[in-house]
Length: 204
Image 1 (cartoon, helix red, strand yellow):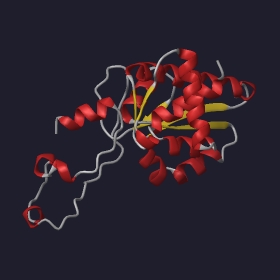
Image 2 (cartoon, helix red, strand yellow):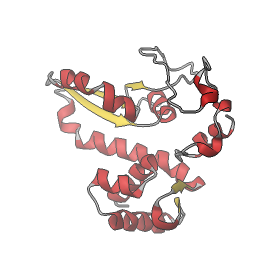
Image 3 (cartoon, rainbow, N blue to C red):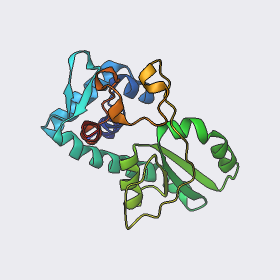
């Protein structure tokens, strides 16, 4: 099986967007679609559910299972490519939420990479995936948005910020705190980040 097919699916499974996958891999959207179709043919299963125009994509049950396999293969491929340099450098792999990565860690990375003996690898993932990969020793340290109880992983809070709601709704302006139940679900913009996110959202 061609690794490029698996790599394309791994990126798509994270982004759930053909457009973003094409941008990350420097491919056309048609090339992404072709690779996905070829991978599904080789596996003999359907990995994603395609909606009209490819704007909304979700993984099938088989896709969710193959996602972890694809990520494992991706990590092994990275290790093979970097094998020659591992003996002379220290390797640090960080898993981090995309928003935190973009806004808080740029200066930290620059400082770390000034040490030529450190090989730094950054993986942007969702919180649950970071916990899973830390537990599996795929990544060394993770930065997440919320706590998931685990006896195998040491956790420490390093930053807390209040969320601010900007609104013109006079019924909400003078309230000291806002709960999700106070907001109308029909006015929300829903981002499909997978079945676990959808399940959690339905409980609010």
